[in-house]
Amino acid sequence: KTRVAMSAVVPEGSEFTDALELTDDVVAAAKAQGGTITELYGVTNGGAEAGYVMKISASGSQSTISMMVGLDTEGAVTGVSVVKSGETSGIGTKVTVDNAPLPSGVPVLDQFIGKTAADQPLKVGGNVDAISGATVSSKGVTNGVNGAIAAFAAIG
Image (cartoon, rainbow, N blue to C red; front, top):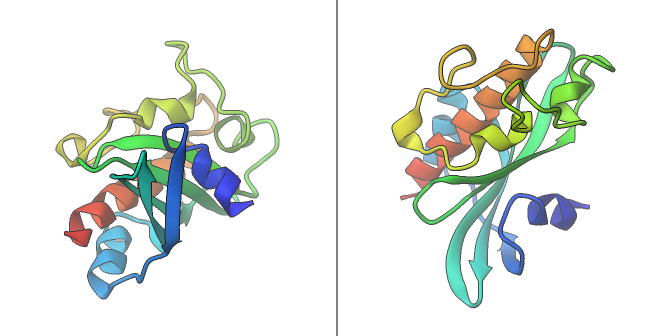
């Protein structure tokens, strides 16, 4: 199940290392942005280092939102996939389960692809769009992605 979630946020054909050790710096960097990192994996593609995937959680409207976030070797987000959430059905689940399209037509989770530390802080109402009626859920995912980008920077 974890491998499937990880595969959803990286380029096709990627492979993963065993779980890597979480240093205090990485955990603190994620926490400073509102995220709690629980797992970290290296990513390779075609035998070359391709980045990281991390499992990170943040507070949503009704629950903790747990997600996988992929980052390439430059720290750009390659994908976001929610793996567990108890957000309100039909409202928060538009973000966490359905990956519903924003008014621009872009799926809500896909708007994070390509974002880097240069875009931080990612902020709903600023450089991140929310699903109408699910602003708090959208903010939760945004905090998780901010945490992942910050954790990447702390990996060194």
